[in-house]
Image 1: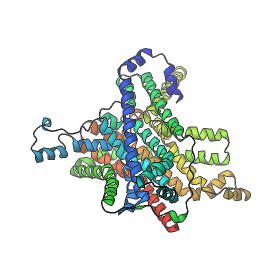
Image 2: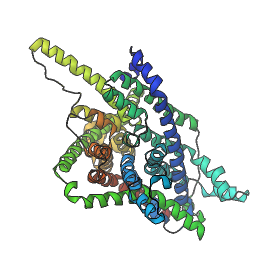
Image 3: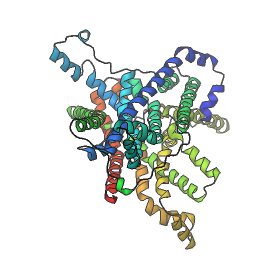
Image 4: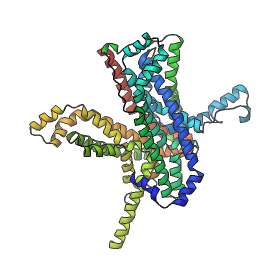
Length: 527
C-alpha cells in the first residue's frame, strides 16, 4: 500500500496527464457503472432468495437453501466465456432463433449484446449474489418471528413487514455481503477484459505491459485502492455502529409464511433461476464441450498446467494456514493493541485487488533484485539475475497477501471456540505455550485448519489478475490458460481447464452448503 500510494508523489506528470485526459474518465465511469449494476443485481437475487428460503414455506425449500450457494464455485470470467459462445451470433441460441423465425441476417432482429457492460453486470451478479444471500439468510434466520407478528397485528401485510421491519434489521449483514461482492467485482480482470469493458484492472495491466509504464500503472492502482478504501469506509458508515438485538426462543425456529399455488411456483422459479444460470447451465455446457473434444482436452499441456496450479495452491495454502495459526495464537496469548493492530493489518489484503497487490509487490521486489545484482557485480563480479521478482516466490507472496485473511478468519473462528480454561489447565500441568498449542489446541483445530487449507487452495486456483502480472516467464496456470484460450476465441480448448476450476471450487461450496443445511436441521431439532 505504501508503494502504491507513494507513486502519486513521483514526477510522472506527462504520463499521468495523458492517462487523465484520455482513459481515466472511461475507467472511472465503467468501474462506477459496474459497481452500481452489480450492487442492484446481487441485492435483488441475494435478498429475495434469502427471504424466501428463510421465512417462507414452499416445496423444495430445503433443497434451495444450500443449492443457492453453488454458483460461488464458478468464477465470473468462466461464465463470461461460456455464455459468449452460447449466446453470440453463431451460437446455438441465435442460430435456433433464426431457424424458427426465418431470419437471415443480424439486421432482421435485435439481440442484446453479450460483450457489454450489461453483460458483465449479469455475469458478476450470477456468481457473487451468494455473498449477500448467505449473510441475509443468517440475518433473517436470527430475527424474532414475534417482531414480524407484531407488525402484522399493527396492520402491515407481508410485503410491508418485509420492507419496514425485516429488511432494516438485516441491513448490516446485507451491506457486509454487498461489500464483499463489490470487492470481487473491482478485482476482476478476465470478465471485463473479455467483454471489452475498460476498468481500472484492465487499465493497470495495459499501462504496465502495453506501454511499459510501471509508475503509471502504480498511479492507477492508487486510484483503485482509494475506491476500495472508500467502499470499506462507506460500509462502516452505513451501519453507523448500529446494533440490532433480537430476542427469539427456540420454538420460533420454524414458522413464516406458507406459500401455495402460483405464489409457490413463483418462489420456486425465483430460487431456481440463479442456480440454473449461475452453475447448472454453464457447467453443463463446459462438460459438453470437454467431452466433444476429449482428445484435445486432456493433453500434455493440460496436465502440466494442472500440476503448476496444484503446486502453487498447495504451497500457498500450507504457508498461509501456518501464518494464520501463528497470528491467531499470538493474538490469543497477547491480545494487546500492538499485536491486534499488526494482525488486523496483515489480514486486510483480501480487500485489495490482485492487480494492485501485483504492482505494490513487483516494484519493491524489482528494486531489491537490482540492488542485489549491482552490489554482487561490483563486489564479486557476477550477477545472479532475478531472485524475487518474476519468480514463483513473488507469486506465492502475492497470493499470501491477498488470501491470508481467508485462512486467518477461519482459524481464528475455530480457535475462539476453545475454552480458555483448557489453556489454564494445560499450563498448570507444566506445558509451555507451544506445547499447549500442539497437545491441546491442534487436535481440536484439525477441522478448522482443513477448512482454511481448502478455502485458500480454491482461491489460488481461481485467481487470475495477480497471476497474469506476477507469474514467472513461461509459467502458466489453469486460470491463465483458460483466459488465453478464450481470448483467442477457442472456447472448446478452454472448456477442460475451466471445468477443472469449477469442480475444484465446488469443494468448499459443498462444505458450506452442508453447514447451512445442518444449521437448519439443528434449529428444527432444538425446537
